[in-house]
Image (cartoon, each protein chain N blue to C red):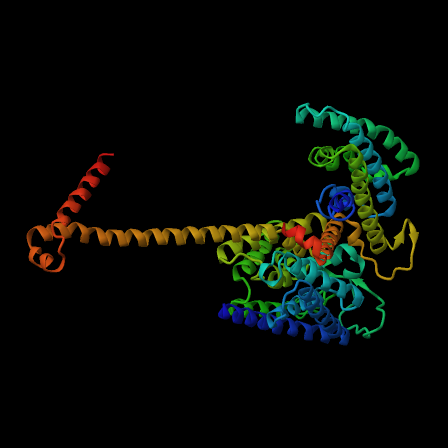
Length: 368
Length: 204
């Protein structure tokens, strides 16, 4: 249990480090406001976690600080110029409604960040989907002007993007502060997979699903573009790392996790293709939580059956080890070991009788 | 005597139709997003349920259960017709917005289930006030829910604008209604558990 808690904290630490790196990149592009938004989300989440746990008569422990990683994910999915109140309501929703009401940290059903994002998307669509251009720094308390739609939005509508490959890698195009830094996200994914912090199967499944469908059903004129752009737009890579591959939600075995990621990616690609819905992968990841739960139940049943089969095998081995000993003992007593048995076990006469009974039982059993 | 009084008032709080028994929740969730909807629903629910249960209480008890339920449904459907006509007079346009949830009130759980399970086991003189409080409990919940949801989701109270800074339009949608009602049920149970009498009855 202690090892598990330690592992959980290490995972949280690793994820926080990668998120902080993305937050730094956001600071570079959007200024101090990105950091303030991240800090506000973390503070509100921690406060909401503390208060809701107290209301549920539970203790607030260091492990409960994992809510801060969800808060940073939320902050990085939003435009930096968003109203702080909206971000705060989103964080409270993530902690209270999406997490603690369903049993808290140990019984996660939804990704809290995904649930909060979808809630904010349905409630404040315009604020959530309008961004400033990169390098436009808005003051901490200033109201943003000159807002634009994201590059994902124009890609979904036209199938084209203005940014060069270098700009795409560096995240120099309009979109959510953390979800556009593709190079950093790729590095973060690699580190987190290698350290076992996220589900590698789910991540590979998501990327594979997107690549396969974007090759088979291209959104752009050129195949290379139609494979490249769907991966970097609509928060696909960001969601693949921090939402779909979240170990708390994704199936444990890589095989099942792969298909879980694959289904999410394919469904979200089809939705983007047919409806041009922005960031559909987050919505689909949230809707696919029953599939993750079904996979987890399947894994549990398989584990139980394995354990049962193992126990039965061990029992049979024990029985088969005992049977020759029992079968050999009457013969021994008849022929050779009479003196020893005589010396050690006084009821010598009973043993042959018992063995006869056993033989009779065996015979009747065979006949039956 | 005290217990008898409590059982009459149960429908209002202790055994609230929506918050405690989680019955008739679909109109509250789907249509209870504005006060006008809630008023129309509350009016229809009150009229249909009160009249239906009162009339149904005269049906002979020795009839088979299945037959009685069919008769209850027929009676409440007949009562629904004038209620709808009245609602169209008082709330023009609202009934169309409410849609299928308005006619569904004619076969709500209070008529179909609770009549046999609860009301018809009481004497008629006791049943009438108990029924009134059950209906009042539902009306109170739908009106309170609609008031809060309308204020937070649309920034209005009974279609009048108020100076609300940040609106949470998700609360006006069915999923927001589910979440809000869930939170309300949780708060209701938490408040109930504060009272020692409720705790002891809960344990029993």
